[in-house]
Length: 402
Image (tube, rainbow, N blue to C red; front, side, top):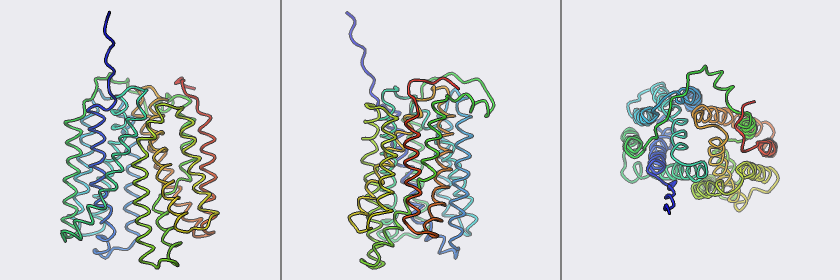
């Protein structure tokens, strides 16, 4: 009688390596992001430059994700592109230390985000290839959890370097090289990419057409939800405004930062739980529940009195629903599309999410300014709820094209 074959653990060298790389890379750029507004102010730069830097960088990153996703499916080996993406991001971020004008920062941030955009669909495709479809949720949940730990450690590190060690802005930017290059080294030495056959070269348009119908329905749901999914830095603004009359400006600002830290802890803590659940229940329904949770949060902001307990609940629920959203979207994307098209699928998904992030934050901000908080978050709640309903139209178990 032949012995049972050993079950391969999903927590293998590649999953751990990619998870740690996400932690170190996010650690690196969160240090820089925390310090960047004050550094620009020291250069005598107006606030409009910060918006321009972020907007140009995010736009370039979204384009890079789309192009990289299409291109990476044609490669027999994806890992060299992944390593290069992490190296470019690390060097671009550290080069802030050389800037003497705002356009220098713009060029450096654009280069860093170009590397980030190139590597994103490649990383997700390599991660999906390293595990079985039955463990996609845990693998992507682990990666999201580690990434968010980096987002928690980064601002704390910036505070220690500035306040504890009394370093200037430029040495702090140079310090970002340590975790940034560590991320690239982890990809180079810990990730074990599986052999794969190159996919026949097709045009970008044909590549899009070959994506299966269930995935396209999924993208519609993601796009609708994303059009309401505002940047959660707006929650910091909400808390600062609502708590100001009670705690004073300084107290409200401190409380808002503390609430946002709790938001990130909730995200990190629930990302793996969301992945574990995704491997055990219907992913479509789980994602719809995550979207519905976001709708409930937005409704609460629109209609409930904004005291400290309510705001604390909003920040925690915000962290939880983002953990579900990002983890389950990635694992569902991997399940809906054949592995030969994973790069393309992840690139398109990332671009749709990027466009939604930009659109939603602008629209929510405009509605907030013009009509007040209830109108802004009622808009988000409506799109969140519609996104949940559209998600339920996605059918699992079929990858056939339309």
